[in-house]
Structures are given as C-alpha cells and as structure tokens.
Image (cartoon, rainbow, N blue to C red):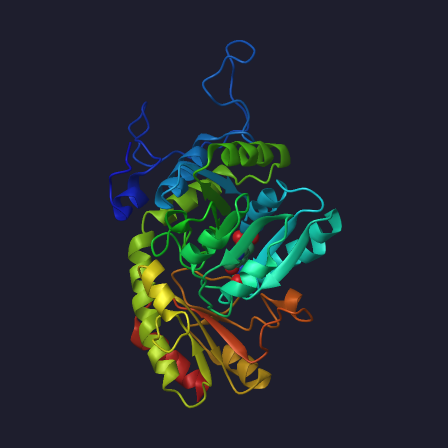
Length: 377
Ligand code: P1T
C-alpha cells in the first residue's frame, strides 16, 4: 500500500492505478449504471452504480488516503454527506454543535432533522468548560468546523476529542482547511467531512461531498446508508474531483501565501474594523491553529462599519467575483448575512451583518490587493 508516501505523493497517486487493459494513466469515467454478471451474483465486484462505481471507488480511496483514514465515501454534495451521517442517529439522540457553521448545516439540523426527533445544542467550542457541561447522556455526536464558516474561529480538535465522553463521535467538517493543512483523524476525531465542491475540487466546476474515517463498523454503517439513501456523485463529478485533488497541496500553499498578505493589507486598512484570519498573531485561535494546521488557508472574513459598507464593498470588487462558494482557484467575495448564511439570520447563531467573506484565489496577490484597495476606497 501507499501509506509511507508523503501527502503530496498521495494526493496524486492514492486510489488510482493505470488502467490494466489500456494503460490509461487517468482513471476512466465509468459512465455506466450497471455491470454484466456471468451468473446471478457472480460479477467482478460491481453490481449497480448507486452501490459502487470504479471512478467513485478511486475517489473514495483517495479521500481516505489524504485524510490519513482507512475508509472514504463520496456523495453528491457536502450536505448529502452530512445528511447520510445524521441518518445513523435515532429520535431522542442529542448532537452538540459548534456555534458557527455553514448556514446550510444549521438549516439541515434545525429545520429538517429536528422534525425527526434529533436534538441539537450550540456551543462556543473555545470554552472547553461550556463544552464539557453541554454533553448529555443522549449525546451521540460532537460536530464542528475549524476554521469555522464564516467567523474563522479555531477549535482545538485534540482537546475536544479528549474531553468527549466514550461513545460520542467527534466529527469535523474540514472543508475550510482541506487535508493539505489539517488532518482531524490524526488529532483524535472519528470522522471527517468535506464539501468537495470547495478546495478538493478546487476549480468551481463540481458539487460534491465526502466522509473519511478509520473505524470499520462506522464505515459499514455509512456505506449501508450511502447505498440505502442514494445521494451518490456521478462518475464525471468523481473524475473532476480526482483531477482537482492532484494539485491540492500546491494550490493550498498559494492560497495560504496570498491570504496572509491580503490579511495584513486589510489589517492596516482604515475602512476595516476587524480582520478574522487565523494566520494573524492577533487572532484568538492563532496558537491552536499553529499547532494543528500546516498553513492557515485561503479564507478571510472582515468586519466593516455596517451592513451598507459590506454590501457596497462586495458589489465593487472586479477580480473578486460576488458569489457563494469558496475554495476555487479564482477569488470570490460574499456577504454571508444575506447569502450563504441567510438561513441563520434570525437564529442564535446569526452572523454579523457587517461581515464580508473572502475566498482568496491563486491569482497574483498584487492584483488582488489592488482590487480590494479600490473597492474599499
Ligand atoms: O454546498 P455543499 O457541497 O453541499 O457543501 C455544504 C457545505 C458544508 N460545509 C461547509 C463548511 C461549507 O462551506 C459548505 C458549503 N458552503 C458554501 C456554499 C459557502 O459559500 O459557504
């Protein structure tokens, strides 16, 4: 197996072999729904593409390898990955969640799964005493993002995994960091989730999700649910994600380098009240981030004078495109309060209306800084 290789090598090779019949170096797009059997239940390992597909299998093995896990599962979207995980729990079960998450995650938890009897509480993960006090005998899952979307808060994965009681799964949405910068399974988490729409895909051309884990029985439960529920990605989307991951480590280096320079520029800018970027020494999570991340990533949030200033800036940038999503090679800007996090607006975890979120791409950093300078003027 490939475990002894470095991350950069795994990102390019894990889960993939040249095609044995043709030598094709790229995994083919197995655009097929079914597989011919020589006799009932006698087949080559594949029966039906909801259950298994060779392009998807390559992606699942690759995601497992880059997260340092034994098992991976791919889904039609990040939300589908979280949805499938939640189906493992039963009415009455309690889930503890960090109090800053993607708006769609909040919506799925409180507006969909609460109706099926799952109970959620929201906690500040930087306050370990508050987290300790929030577990109940019914708690089955601690769910967190770090860095969080969009407040860029840092949770100490090792500390949280240590304090979670026996029997509570610790799940980390690793979308913002990507495994090139942070590997939660190595820090004690039980399951890692991705919106592979973002840094894994990396080119804003595919929507997808993934889970990675080490525990065999957890994997079997989730593999069962993946097939039973059916939110699987298409072979073409798996191919695009496989191709994207090959450059993940190189892209994350440039995302991180550009974002650091932009965070420093913004921190000095008079129109910007606060810069939320874990790479800045002033960030309250900087020390933890330095310990658990290999770089600080490409996401930055800033707080401006008010909602009008925020809406004005996101409408004035030219290179930073005003759009939801993140993690692509091109820079994006958005207003979470009215866009990605509109579903939390009236909730206890609403985001500040004066907050603007940047997904810093891998263009030349001087061009990006000039664009922000003219938009903030
Ligand atoms: O969009 P989808 O692939 O279903 O992934 C959902 C999701 C889950 N977790 C995090 C941390 C995310 O950021 C997302 C999607 N986020 C956006 C679309 C956004 O602009 O924040």
